[in-house]
Image (cartoon, rainbow, N blue to C red; front, side, top):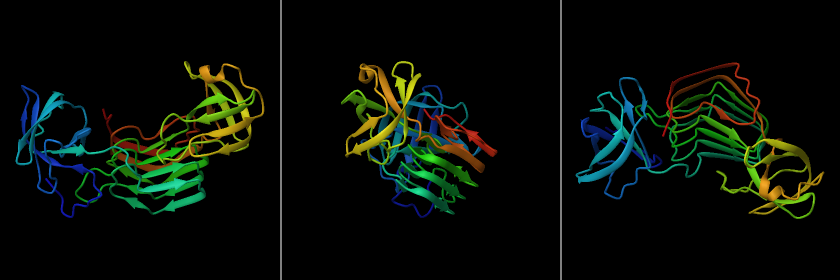
Length: 307
């Protein structure tokens, strides 16, 4: 089942469920010609859109598949919803993050107002190393007749500071969190008693390195328990494309590289939601770590957990 006006920025396919065999746990689906498929088509994530409940059915696990030709697949499941799914839409993602629709990087005192994102084969908005952001009347929702907006997080903010305000925003059909706000644990090497070379072991969503600024407060965190040990103020920073060198105000333990991470406490913004809604989502709304979280007026519906 296909809506009119399909766009090439949509990175998913929508087959129609033709047959559900409950006894052997299989689904037969047929893709419309607008979504050409073959035995090599990748399916890292999938779900059913239920027209009765107007939400995604995510409690399913595929263990195998057979390409039947003529745009049809038989999908073998060990777990799937108990409802009759015949005639429903079966969504298949072809990728995860890829690129965001909007990237905010090293920006400060920034307002995004009346922005609408209908579809993106990745995240909607990614913010990295920003300060004081207001998102007002942001809408990340599917186009009329469609049900999926972003492949993964609607918004994702990393190593930001100040205030991150969502005011009157709407989120619907996003493939993961409506927002994910966090900082990183930094691996470190000692270049001196109070000088470290730091880096993060994962690629950031902006594809740029993460680093502290002079004046930031870094916390030494136990790798095994994630319990904090001591805070350090950063005196100076030099950085390149792979790591940074930071001078701290006090010496670190000699065994710090083996036992501890550094986390940037300054880069944990106060997150404020005012009159926001989230519907038919696949994970948390919101998902925040190490942040002040006042939720004055917030409501959501259709919560599901995406495996």
